[in-house]
Image (cartoon, rainbow, N blue to C red):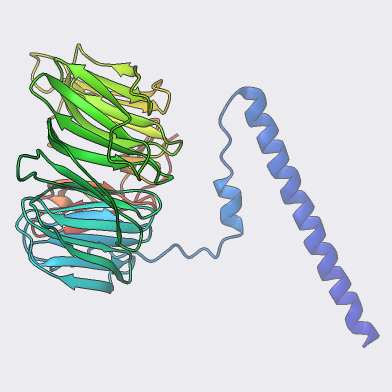
Amino acid sequence: MVGDEKPKKKKHRLIRITGSILSLAVLTYIAVMLITGRGVDITWFLDLFSSGEPAVMASEYNFDVGRDRVFADLGGSLAAAGSLGVQVLDIEGDETLRDPFRMSNPAIKAMKGRAIAFDIGGTAISVFNNSQVIASIETDNIIISASINRNGWFCVCTQGSRGYKGFATVYNSKGNEKYCVSLSSGYILSAALSPDNSSLAVLNLTDDCSRITFYNDLSNESADSTFDLPGNLVLDIWYTDDSNLVAISRQALITVNKDGLGSELFNFSGKRLGAYTYDDSFYALHLYDYGIGFRGQLITLDIEGNIIGEVSTDQELISMSSGGGNLAVLSTNGFNIYSSKLEVYPPSVERASISGATRILPLESGAALAVGEHLAVTLQRARPEG
């Protein structure tokens, strides 16, 4: 028994020595990187303590939800909405949820593990996570748009009737109706609900301008403030994590507070907007040079509107979207997966393997999903070159 203790002590001593050497190596590496002004990347160190077995991911996903499929990342699962309803597959490609119903023009929005699928021009809505349907709703009026916030509350915009030009209805995370406003002027386009569920911003189009109407007390149907943008068109609105509203027009990114006061984050009036997308920590714009074919720039901005990445482009862009801190771009020349600073990640598949793809979706896992009418292929990313 006493003889068995010596090997154990030697083993423990060896572990302590090895740990000390590794700690010294890491500290030395960090010091050198900071002194030379280079970035610190200790993923190689963390990999030493991992199992060495990356998460299993299907190279192809087989969705069968009919035509006009649209997709969303549920943070570890993939959701698809099509003409036949909703389907969710896990990272290995196994089905975890199916909700059959008819849609003529399916659309989907997702946020923090929940999604809302809806039929634009129809009346069907399904709110769900990766394993269960939270709410199934049939609206009284035709659906124009819908959104979901970080707490799972969602808002549905519908076409007006009886003299009204649109309705915005807010539901809680269980699908219970909590608030509804009707517009007597200005046709409703979309709406966004703040992360704390306290403020509703409605984007509508009047005869004179694009208007954002704020309802900061969801127990009162009267508007609290408005922001007008004469002579320009606001394309979209969304809330950031800190409850600031961001709007994008054909000429600028704009932030608007709840009192209706706006200021420009970034002006691109000298360019033609090709596409835009946003993540929790950055915005991405694809801007064409006027009158010069497809030549332009891909630009990323931090949440204050400062440029953090820029690359030149000379190809027609087919699809661009952001998620998980990454940006995925599909063009006539192929695809790229970027970091928020537009560092390009080498793909793990040949570009020819996604022939026929029409959209690309970055995933929180760091991969991306290239999809078309008959394919859904995952594209793994690697670390930035160099």
